[in-house]
Figure 1 (cartoon, one colour):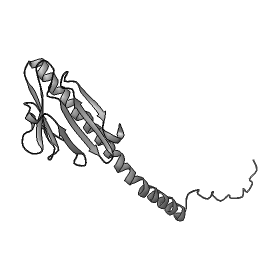
Figure 2 (spheres, rainbow, N blue to C red):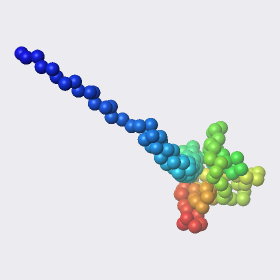
Figure 3 (cartoon, one colour):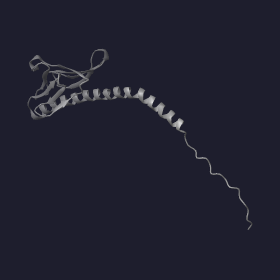
Figure 4 (tube, rainbow, N blue to C red):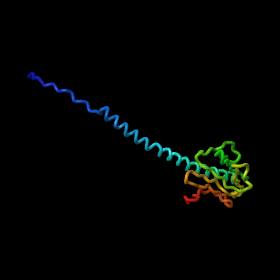
Length: 161
């Protein structure tokens, strides 16, 4: 074998990004976050609003189920000023988001102190009727209780109808 002198090759220059390129990308990401973050907050409030509507409807249906299954009157308590409701004799109160405006629609005999009242369900499934209106900005939904059947439905109110 012959000994040949091989020319030495310089190692290839490492491919990468310069500090200026990294700073530029990070600046663009920061600007994007500035525009996206406020919209993300509105989206989460919308999810919480829809969740509160379903939660109230579920609570009303649960009270109706108690009345039917136990053969006695059962009550759905609402305090619109404190943004809470309670299901019949259960001690736990359920809190609704403060950014939602609540209105209780119920029979006059079911009103208690200012801002509080009940919707009563009877053993045959009927109810005193009424509902709870949940409002967030221009959005208004009513969780409605039919007095004759006690059925609970979610309906749009006003401009959203």
